[in-house]
Image (tube, rainbow over all chains, first blue to last red):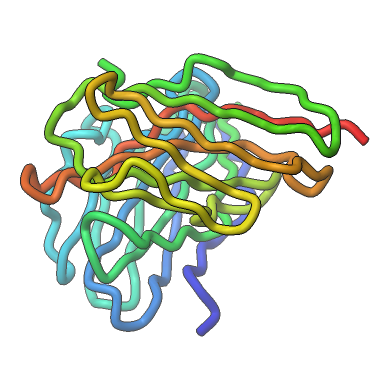
Length: 113
Length: 113
């Protein structure tokens, strides 16, 4: 298995533009998580899905953020419109269990200028 | 409100000596604890874990200690090697509380040759 695959690896965009981050989880993993890493807040959970259904999106910072999982092999995190304070590294992770064994992707470094 | 706290942003240790990374938590429902290791431009990878029914778990050079009464855990690396230089994240979850992994802000370990 190739692990959790995220794209793009780097994204530079202008303030106000729409940004879409993509994730392919490990086949057979029922849980998918989106985390954001910043210096100030460390790794914070934005949203997670179980069997393609969003379970908890309380970590999503604002309505500008949305996430979807149309099928078991694909998820997106969208920011519209993007702002400079959204600059961070966004990680997708998948797991067969909610409590341990998360496998992370390599992340997308987002820079909003 | 940080439920998992890593109060030392960075730590520097001589090669061959012991590295001790600390983590405190506030949620008494947490019953499973993990350490993840992260190299630059990569996602976090699982290192070692411990269940709340234990107070110690060892894996090669890595040992995690859990003090439930103090709500404190630590990761010991003996002996430290330059390849251990990375950011270490402490994480906790709650099976009974149906809570996914909550991460601390991380501690950057530098092992000096």
